[in-house]
Image (cartoon, rainbow, N blue to C red; front, side, top):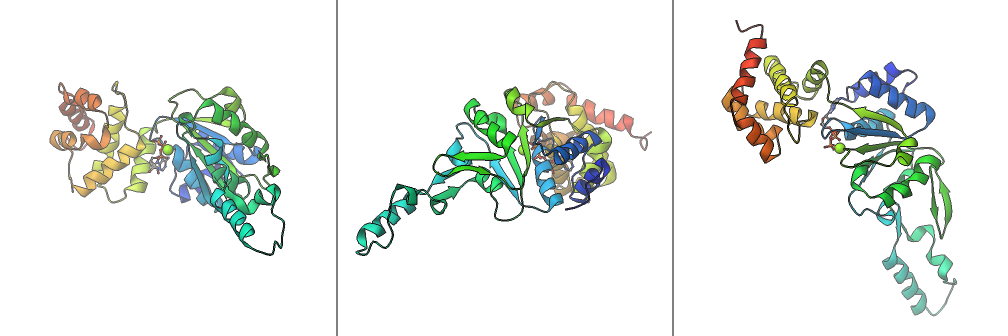
Length: 303
Ligand SMILES: Nc1ncnc2c1ncn2[C@@H]1O[C@H](COP(=O)(O)OP(=O)(O)OP(=O)(O)O)[C@@H](O)[C@H]1O
Ligand SMILES: [Mg+2]
């Protein structure tokens, strides 16, 4: 177990795994570790929610178990299913053998060996150390599934009718994420420590791009971040996240761009904006040229 005795330790350890956390996020993570509570991360798309769980698994040096939520996700696909083909095979074998060495009854067919373990089961009953459990995009699931999660989140246990209650011996570090496409129930949030992950500040985003795209020219990096931050001020349906800033930096590097011009900006807009109306909005009028001009006027090297 790495040293995570102070909030600064959490920030430092995460940075070693290429995740730059603000003090408020590090505080939430620190408290989740201390109080053994799940972390509920909400924020706009691409602000680094999923990456928190990935980085924490690396920090704790344990596996990451991911449950990707979707509309219609149910208990069976999240927790366990009975392996019907295997049960059927056991019945066939039993029927075809002349010696019935062991009795086959309802009970023997519902043993752990016939269980297909799904992410939640694996997370509570791992073979190795307690993992990090990422329950990603919980807002895509429905009310019923949320209600089902309550027991796991507060008791770290699950009830299997045929086997009884199974309780985690060591609690996994749980991260839930939501893009807030709908409100998640208070009952679920109450069991967690909540953190709203905002877009990073200019300085922080600059550091993230530097960390993840180290080859990009320094001036270009500043321009990329400034333009992405500027775009977020526009009334867009889908604002570019950190993910898009990084994609754009990679794209400009691949294009061997030396300086951002209105033409390059316009041609690569699809890396930043993924919505036709948003693209039209930016292309209309003089916005692209105006934003590039703002860059130049902010640039101390251009007189
Ligand atoms: N603070 C940060 N430090 C380092 N990398 C970051 C940071 N924030 C975001 N990133 C990077 O930005 C990218 C997007 O992050 P991630 O996929 O975690 O976002 P998300 O909030 O889960 O998005 P979505 O809602 O679309 O699932 C990743 O490559 C991630 O590593
Ligand atoms: Mg995500």
